[in-house]
Image: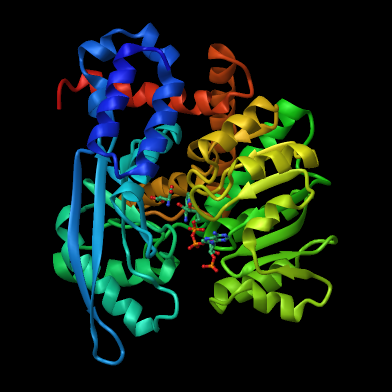
Length: 447
Ligand code: NDP
Ligand code: 2IT
């Protein structure tokens, strides 16, 4: 990065937010890659667009007190970052994980702004969460926690203001409890959350959308950049949560073999393909661990270190767990093993060094904000269905999802080729997403 305007902005963010490494990482990657576009558009500097773009419109922090099954009181810290509303109401998930802090909230909200722009739908960027650990909690504890969380959050959100959804640790159960509490507090039935159950306004296809969308994007990328498809490929998937499980299922449907799958307990490996029905049953229905899978499927091997899965020989890598799970050493293993594509299901799963190494070595790379946009896209469909009081069929949703994921790939690809080379999809995604947000911010004046 040599543009003085961008360098000054990055230095300023670095000083102000020096204790926020994930946020700085995301900001650096974006500013660095939008540089050629910013060079062509001096009006961005005159209107102070980028300094406004890296500062969240609002960051809300609140106390979340709740009572466990033994009557003990706990206090967690809740957050909602309302990052950018230039192109639509704030939209983004809620993460429940002990690691949640302002840096993680802000990097996710910042990325979400560009991701939501790429979907082509009118949604701004937001994210929320809490440093609460859902693991090992009873249903009643989860319910009391969610009700307490919403008792504060409700005053900051709304169907035309800010629409939260799921993320790590937040699935249909949590969304249900939060929706119930919102409705009770507001005496209003609106589509204020997405990822709702099908009996109360949820969109069919939302649960599988991120994972399915990731595979539609990957298949198109392989076709255009590598003249092949997922058919016959060996795939490894990290994380066996909402994104990972459905990515694995769709990869298999498209003819690939999922040879390895991980969660926090380790990874399972099976040359002939993981039994995805069994994995889904253990992870989704029983909220269990893959170590249990290994005790049932005698044909697999189990390694208690999930990180070692990156050494497994395969063709396609789908990281679907969490940020910075792939570092430079892992990226070197991909090159050594002849990997042809890495597609990010999680948000920012590759470090900057890993991403650069992957791109330099001409592995087809699908950056998170483009490749995992299918989840929030179908959330956008859910918002439309709620407003219209309609319910589309699975076929309608899936067809729209597939077409739009392919179209995002093509937009990113054309943009990468225009400004640099076809492997620089990071630049392609960042400039494509940024253009629309910047145009809206320019049109709306200094606000
Ligand atoms: P879930 O909570 O459903 O699943 C997360 C999974 O990752 C779990 O299986 C968890 O293991 C596993 N995991 C966590 N840390 C590690 C690790 N270090 N190594 C291996 N596995 C690990 O979350 P989601 O699937 O919803 O989210 C996953 C990622 O995708 C996040 O980055 C999220 O921001 C992103 N994302 C999610 C979307 C959505 O619609 N839900 C949309 C777009 C992006 P265990 O089960 O043992 O806890
Ligand atoms: O990171 C993401 O895009 C999500 N967690 C989904 C957000 C949403 O509003 O559906």
